[in-house]
Length: 81
Image (cartoon, rainbow, N blue to C red; front, side):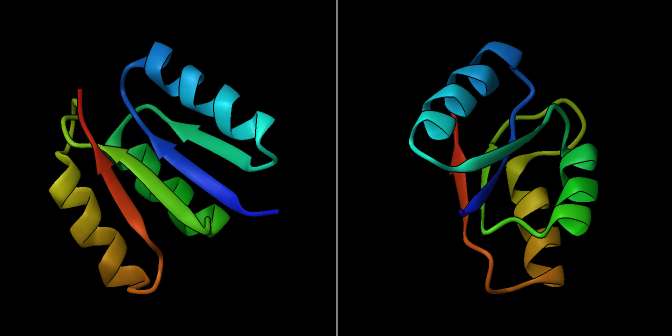
């Protein structure tokens, strides 16, 4: 089963994505800030990251840059409303 990390500060959007992906047989973990998402990325080694462009503490491009420094092979999709 593929593991997806959702980094999204809007709890409602995060839960909507999690429910959809879980119903489609993905393991989903969520973080509601950029820093927490980076911590979870290191701890959980997800197969894919969905990251909001606008977060309270970091923007999506900064999160993308830090993830790619740690593992250049993990796909990251930046999302925004």
